[in-house]
Length: 225
Ligand SMILES: O=P(O)(O)O[C@@H]1C[C@H](O)[C@@H](CO)O1
Ligand code: HPA
Image (cartoon, rainbow, N blue to C red):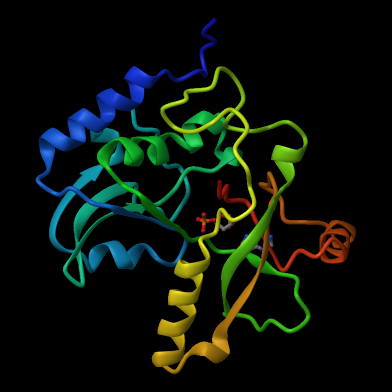
């Protein structure tokens, strides 16, 4: 059965094929630039960029400050693709729309995904402006059954029951920390547990206290995996 929100394999493939026919780049790395990191995409060299509204099948960004552009290019000589703006559940997108680009990236040949977003810190030891590398997450909507993987499983993208232990690759996290050390900015870098909530409202004081007691270090409205 197909409901109106269900996206089938051909839909992802159509978008991937369109992109592959409009750029020579063949990135292995995708970066989702959250609020404040959009300028990273501007720094790519040899750019091919596409407005989301010009890409067949792509959702549209409605958040202020999100350019709504997919940028292919080279960062330090490595081919990558950057989303300048992501999709959030609170914009009214179905979760399969929110995660649509990630599956398209997989079909482009991407095997490493870097996700970033603005979040609120709950950990006592964090300072405003710190960067947190995600070690693990609590997907609150997911725990309540709101999950982009609901519905028929597409085995091409992964198993029906994917494990969530180890989704934040240890070697990539170490690499990020090592680079921060070598840049002399490690005092601003933390590693912790991210919690995704639905929003769009910020958390009440009681909710923030609850999340803190559950071991959440940072909370935001951006879906990770
Ligand atoms: O995914 P981004 O970084 O754009 O998420 C922002 C930060 C909050 O979670 C929400 C509202 O500020 O969008
Ligand atoms: O969801 C959030 N909660 C608190 N602070 C935030 N800053 C960005 N997103 C959030």
